Length: 331
Image (cartoon, rainbow, N blue to C red; front, side, top):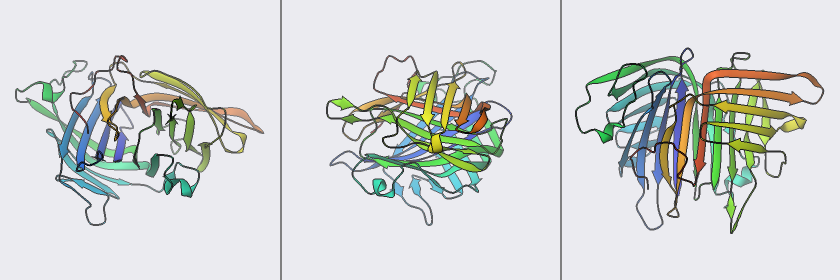
């Protein structure tokens, strides 16, 4: 099995963001292990900062969700330290939880093998993140800290004051064969709007299903359910750097999405599968996203754009994608 709690936060004024994960992984017959993953993006400073810590010290804090080593995640707070990076964050939301799967029985059944929810599909963050840095000059690429045994000369502190983002949760016994996760906030045309959708292809025996989407778009304070089991019309064209997606929505709506990542802003990770396989994963949490919503009887179409408020993750089997993979094993 695997289980993951994760959060993302992005600056409202510049292309700087963070993606932090607390995960548990257990292979058949083995003891579970927990990992902390810390990624900080800055489009003006080259490649993202990435670090990871793995520990057998696992627990559930009082009133919370997960603890790994000395790091904790609870409803409203995230604390942790990983490879010289540290974070102390508070978050709040007025949004109810988003349950991506369309039926409650699907969360109890064996299938689908991946379950996901967003306890806070849109949240505001306060606090700070401190990361060691090898280079402070804009545009200069930085190596993964573990690749250089010399002491890190300086640190950078990010003060989060009203940063937008989300908190998510997924778990299961098997990753999708291929997946996309999209999240968007900070839309110029509707600052309260948000997008949260997972799209996947699942292997069944020798076959791989077409793309299936589950999620929602919140627009004008009203949620539009996107995708759903058996709903036709999901179209996807993707590379690690960009994607175009067309999704069917409730009441005949259609949402067309275009995502573009900044140069050198992709974080590459390796995810272990519980069955012994693995996926390469690219993530950019400061991507640009444009979406267009078309609804029957509503004219004209509505277009929203966020310059750097989107997260785009692609999980894939191939290894020739050109995204540098961080040198941390998983599983």
